[in-house]
Image (cartoon, helix red, strand yellow):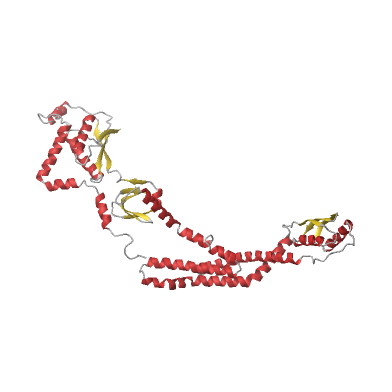
Length: 481
């Protein structure tokens, strides 16, 4: 037969509650028994006469005889000095300490009593003591067993009816909302409350009233459950208040936080919604935003871009830098302040790598689009200025050498022959004039194409902001659960 995990869980929980309640009940019973035993051992108040004029020796002899005859004391010492009685010794039961003091106080001729009697230390390693305590605990458990079984049965009944009761109580909610998620959450909350109510009755029936009140109070089990359930909610709510006061960003800003980049669409008490540049909605908890590093790309509209380009070692590096600078200064999307830069970054195996830096207004232009256009124009400018851009160098070794033929040398065209007659090295300003003339000619021949090429550099932020405004809220629509 296949066991039901839910039934096993309930049985295990009931047994644990029975054992804990039995332990507390046994401790309570032992305390009450000790109080009863102590109350039953008291003197009657009758004055014990030693003699009409009792001396110290007579009082001592009388008390010694009475306490010894009780057979409850070991190493008993009784001393009387001018009516002051000193008691010393050991007894197995704590109640006989007070009882001996009462006997001495009620003896004729006694002025006061100094009671130094002590309870004898038990031999905790004795088997007899262990068996005696075990039997006492067993008898007390049997005495409390009917009450504990009734309490356990009550808890089990509340546990099994928790879900049907929750479904019945939450049923009218369907007239208010069609959200399945709200119904499921409410049913679980009501079911937990019914189980806690069953636990409360279990403790009350078992006689643990104070423990039951502690469990159901704010400092008990219910307080812990509520605290853990609303910890994240409270943390995000407080973080939203701090964000609204410090204002590290505004709606519509492009930010990056916790590895997510996008346009800020809205900020709620729980989280901040971003729309990334792929059109996806990303909800980041406010607590995460407040604790993580926030990078705001919209606070400063000027953004710097860069790209790398390599020229050959046979090229004039200064001339190549000036050529690239001329291209950037002529581009309408590149800002003159801060001015662009062309710096040597690395001496590679076959090229001198130049790093080109430029600034654009990110509210109007896209950095990656401007970088793409600049790379295309710089490459064309280098080609026009005969600036070589070789690939990676490869070394080929000929062990026997390379044969040389004078006839082959004569048939090879010279470098000067490849140059057009009457041409001179191209200067950077001439390349700039060529690019400007080419753009002007393109505008005259096909103004629509020229306008489309210029608009292609526009920033994507505005498009994402429009998509965020026109898109639906993630919370809208029917629940998928």
